[in-house]
Length: 184
Image (cartoon, rainbow, N blue to C red; front, side, top):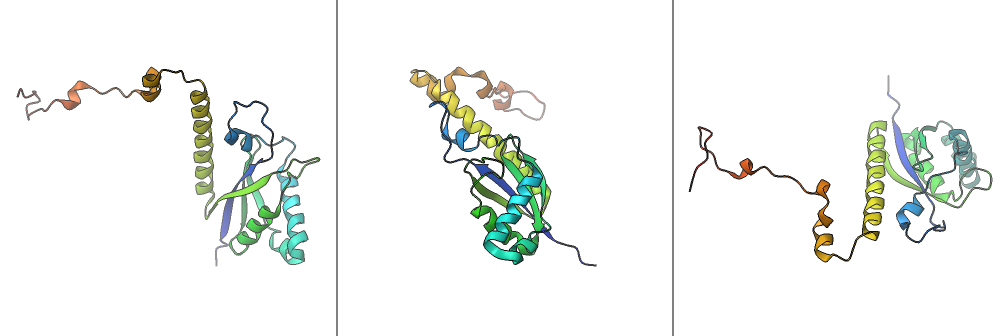
């Protein structure tokens, strides 16, 4: 018996044409804004199959009949698709050709394939890693916007205690076999 091999595509939805409501909001936050809650896995699959039929005909549509949405997060604008290994490039090109969210009056967007994996576990780990990095980028930007004119404070972290690593003095003292410290 032969195992059916599949690929998992991690996709981010980005909004490059979105308007900034506030100039202090970083571009990375605007590009990775949450997707509307009316986007469902069924609507997404239907739009992908229609786009495949439009650009690749019946062959493209039939190749993508077995795709499925394994994960969809409207809050992070991220989803994971499962597709057979021979057809993942067709799916990738179909996603590249899509330019609007598949909902009524959908906004213009870009479907960015972030990673192609052989297991869903690796795709989930990458999604978590990317979400954490976006949070760090946004928090660094907000921290930079609120920094004071204190140059030394900005260089050394502004005296934030959570960034300072406490080092125990005992770690720097040489000890002999008895556990007592040497005096030089």
